[in-house]
Image (cartoon, rainbow, N blue to C red; front, side):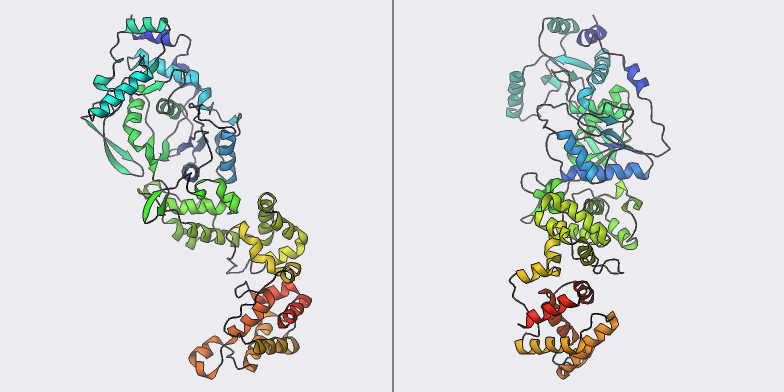
Length: 550
């Protein structure tokens, strides 16, 4: 008996690999088109690192006229969670990363290279596993878990590498006849890859991100088919990336050490290996040291966190591109209104060490993104968020939509639009003072700044109401009247006049306008006061100023 007999005993009914080679032909794409994928396991929440990988993979595919597909690696079904696939699909869709092919919900998919769930590709893997057995490149292993554990303990005690290799690969040399007999007798077994590697030899590999890397050859006889007939990740990814036409495997650098094994699998299977691009993880500073973002410690590690606090998906995507290529920030400054799809991402410009997660930077980007929205867009996006996450904000926005749109329109659409909103959870606090009912219902302490003498404040406000205030004034007229008011009370009409001769004045026009601002809003920092007064209207402005005097 020979290897073909063994292969037929193990896999009596599978198709020849020629069937699958014909079924999944080479993709008809233009020269240089990149085909890549996101291939998560449905074992929990979507991690920001997975979204980061997807942003990069989809961007590279799109800008080269290629394909980005979603493959679900669910061969470890013990760890699978309910709605795990739906969670992945929904997260990608929310962040504008929907794949060109692959799963679109728990059960349905699009594309000609499926199934895109590995658990549904069992017969395909078995066909290629049979091919390896026929070549003498794979063999059944009958070792029980207790034997493997005992072997591992002996290796550790002898300070040797752990694993199934060399003298430790006890089933590697079992004669074919014996293996066939044991299988027919019903013994449980798994299938192992018979590695041709020699760890004394080195392989030279060029990683698209990491550059040139040397590794010892792989000599581990890894499991390729488990006892349930499903493949391990290593074997499945090689078969899938070949049949699906993957040109670039973009993945976390925790897989870098697997490159020798993966290249070896591609070589033995007779496949052209894809290019590998290993992404450094997103790091966090913790007591002066760097560590990976943790699912357990860091809420921002979960993609769902950004929806919960109301950071727009577009802002998160831009931030991740900023991490990916340091020149993105400069590009954005030069192209403030361009769609981020126009940015040319370069894998070889990515950092080889992990970028630090910077929430301050993310919120700055978010402020800029929100500043570009129209008042109507802010309203729609904020109310969609509030319907799920903040009932009080929802009620506030719905109370008077027309008025709210005016509030949200303050300093919007200008050359330098307002940038005071970083996330939808900030919005209520940012605008609530614009609503009379809430303004007068809240207890407040007017925290005046430089001018804080109550009598002087009272006189300033009374004079402003009686002599200078006219809601019909244009902005230039309005501001000139504020200057006139300043001069009346001994304050410089211009800030620069005060700076040039500070002893001649009590202060400057900014101190006077701050008094009015605080009386109107209860705050020292707000968007443009003229616009605020226009939105409030004459009746509300007078009412607020008189209330402050009292």
